[in-house]
Every structure is written in structure tokens, then in C-alpha cells.
Amino acid sequence: MILFAIVFGLAVGTLTSAFAWEAPGPFKINAIYMSNSTNYHFRIYSDTPSWHCSGGPTAGGAWSYIDEDDDGAAGKIKTLQLAYAMGKTVHLYTEGVAHPSGQIYCRIVEFIIN
Image (cartoon, rainbow, N blue to C red):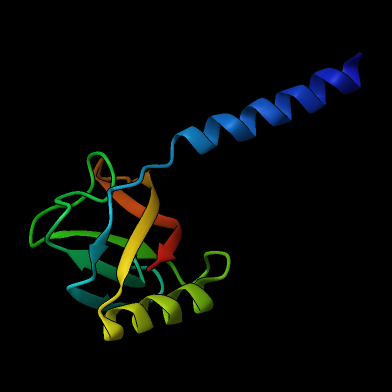
């Protein structure tokens, strides 16, 4: 019974975190910004949609990021750079991450390129 409770708890926890993901809608990347590894390392910008996650940055265009230490970061970054260069449409799945200042920033969890 205890094993069932642990497995059920893990499954519900996993599903709950999946519901926190957001999908801002398809867009073409209009800018890429690269920074150091502790400052939202790789960022993509778009004009529309006007947000990438609830409460995320919108000044100067909506943007979301991949940090250098995120799982699969190198492959994700290369793929998004290629999508930008080829003018492809991107469908993002993001999650809001709170900064100590209280600002929310949008971390790219996964994406689809068309």
C-alpha cells in the first residue's frame, strides 16, 4: 500500500508540473540574444505572440530562454538558431520561473519547428 501511495504521488506530481507548461502560440523568431551562462544564456524574441509565459517579459518584444545547463541545451540552441536562419515557425512550450526580484522569466521546456 505504501509503494502504491509513493508511485501514485510521483505520477500526480509529474502530471501537475506538466500543467504548468504554457504554449504561447506559433511564431517566427525575430531576434536571438546570447549572454553569459548565468544571465539567461540563449534568448529568442518574437513580436507576436506578445507573451511567452504568464507574467513573462514583454518590453522590447516577448522573449524566452534556454540556460547553458538546461537538459539538451546545446542541441536546442542549435535547432532554434537554424529555425531563425531559415525563417521557420516555432511552437514553444515554456514555464515561468520566478527571479529573486519577483519578475517571471520564461524557460523553454520544449518546442516544435515547422
